[in-house]
Image (cartoon, rainbow, N blue to C red; front, side, top):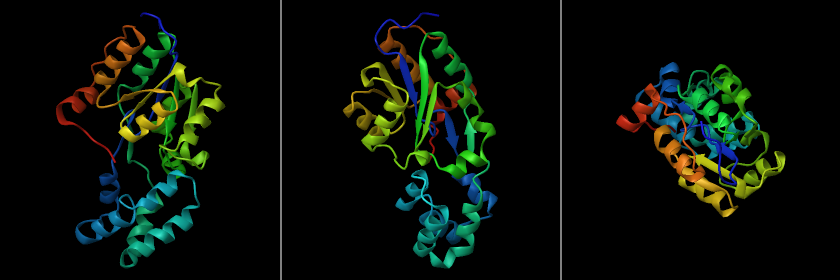
Length: 226
C-alpha cells in the first residue's frame, strides 16, 4: 500500500452517518410508539432543536423537562424514550478495514463527533473500534458542537494538529464548510467508496478497495441516518 505523498497526514472522521448508522426508528419500536404518540415524542425529542443540548453535555434531567414542556401530554412516553439509547447505533462493517488501511498508509486517524453521553454509554460495544483511533473528541465532553469553530480548534489543540495537515470527512455540508473556514480540507461523505476515492485523489495514494454490505447498501439505497 502506498504511503502518503503530500503534507496531509491526519484524517478526521465524523461518526453518525459515516462510520455508524443511527436508527431512531428502532427506539420508537422498542418503546412501542406508533401513531400520534410517536409523532409527539418525535417532535419533543429528535426533531426538537433542544435535542442538540444532549450533544453539548448539559444535564439530562434539565433537557428532559424542556422536551416534556414541548409535548406535555406525552410525558410518560418521552421519559421512556429517553431512558436508554441501547441498540440505536450500529457500527458499519467497513470501519475496521478502512481505519487499518489508512493507518497502513501512514496516516493518523481521529474522530470529531456530535455525540451524547447516554448514546456512548449505552453502545460501548459498537464503539469498540475507537481504541484504534489516534484521538477522539466527543461534543458532550467539551460543551461544544459542530459546526461551532471552537470544537474544531479543541481537536487541533488537544492533539497538536495543524489544520492544513488534516482532512475532515463528514456527511453534513455545514460541518464540512465550518472546518474549511478553519483551514481543514473537507470531504462530504455519501458512501465509503466515494469518500475513499476522494481521499485517494487528495492524498495521491491508492487504498485497498473495500467491498462490504454497508458500502453496497449506501450506493444502492441511499441509506440515511438522523
